[in-house]
Amino acid sequence: MSADIINVNMSGSEAEEELRSFYRWLQDDEDVRRHARVSVRQSSPRESEMGSALEAIDLVLSNGFELANFTLAYLAWRATRRQKVAVTLKRGDVEVTVSDADDQITKKILQALNEKPGGSEESK
Image (tube, rainbow, N blue to C red; front, side, top):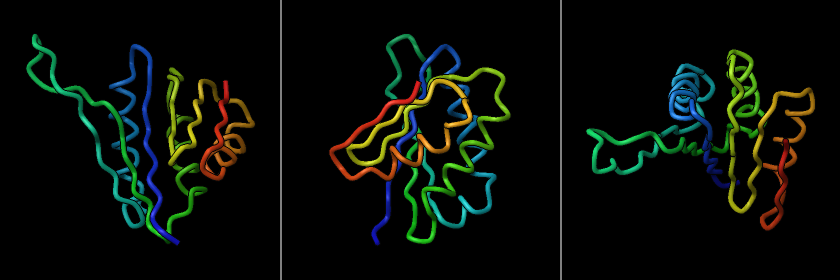
């Protein structure tokens, strides 16, 4: 089994702040630290900006870290958030956008991330 890569993007007025929060959450999670490499992708600064903005989080999951563990970490973080920004999770050709926190969210994320390449699913 090879390593999986998950890309996390957020949209909305608080997207960058929420991405930073989720990145810190992942860094603080012992299982994530042990079994995944978490990095941030930054966009190039605009002409009037001093620094670059946070664009996305990239996770490289090791063989010992299942997608279900990532989903649990995500759900634990999301439960702490007042505002529910739209989150797009991408693994290979599979992309899922979650814009609410209904009780079916775990199932939808797992189904979408575990799809074979070429499929896609969106959750609203």
